[in-house]
Amino acid sequence: MLDALMDRGFAIPDSVNAEKAGQFYAEAMRGKPIGALRRVFENLRLGRYPKFQSFLPKPAELSALVDAAAKHDRELLRIEHEHAEAAKEREEERTRREIGPEERERRRRKAAAVRAMLGTAAKARTLSGGFDD
Image (cartoon, rainbow, N blue to C red; front, side, top):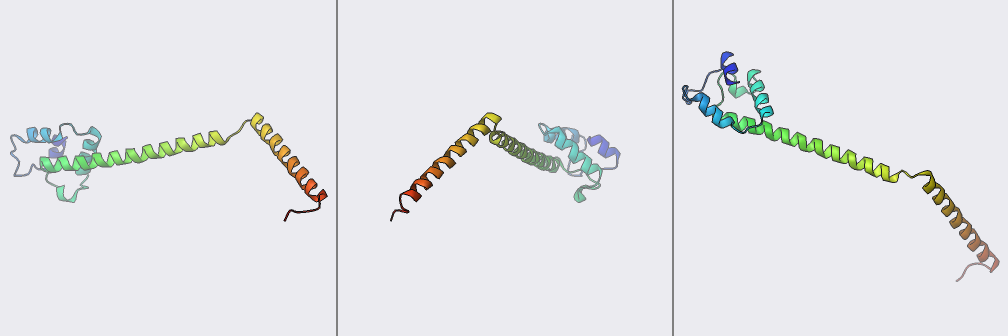
């Protein structure tokens, strides 16, 4: 990727030994997520980093750019995971609230029994002469 940038006119900073630049950059990039690396190199190629429009970042600066991109990726993944978990919880809640025909009938009979009991209690109160004081 560095070679592709240098082919496009990017120069290695004077403070980096040109003979050992590949080794220094390789050390700095070791263990970095490839997706973040690709995005940083693409952004460099497109000139999206105003500070680095003609010179390559120093190895430590490039490492920091990749780390920031990887942190951004992790944050997006965390948000995506939270949204997926929330959607799963909503689906589970909706599934719990859905009742089958048997349960619906049982609840209807229970409500009818409660209404009948309340009607009987109201009738008994009326026949006994009213309200208790």
